[in-house]
Length: 127
Image 1 (spheres, rainbow, N blue to C red):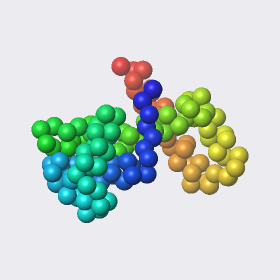
Image 2 (cartoon, one colour; image 1 turned 90 degrees about the horizontal axis):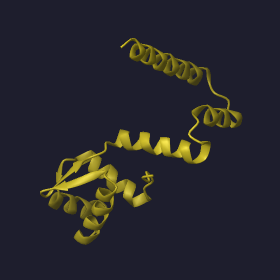
Image 3 (cartoon, rainbow, N blue to C red; image 1 turned 45 degrees about the vertical axis):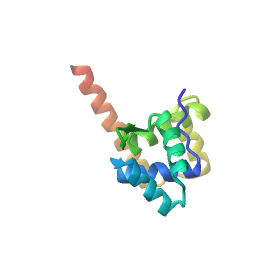
Image 4 (spheres, one colour; image 1 turned 90 degrees about the vertical axis):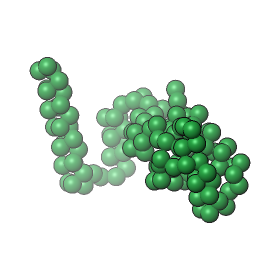
């Protein structure tokens, strides 16, 4: 299973790339020098780590996004559910709501999400 966890600096670096991409690798080195006080080698080492995880790619000197920030967050959430709750969203929600009462707004939003999911599921069944 691919790991969708990032260390603190990896996360900050990824956020910078998501904000600026596509970005020339030389420009990224300059940005990281200013933002993180990194040397060129540190930037390229960190970039290689994130490229190895298929978040980004360095294509002919331009860093491009392979997985958007939203896609990464979804994958990270799925991985969390799998690791801690056997992949069960209902078990997670039950555990979460035991410690903190859901507000009426949160309940309404969850109901809306379920209804939208049911509509999509019904539309797919009609095909």
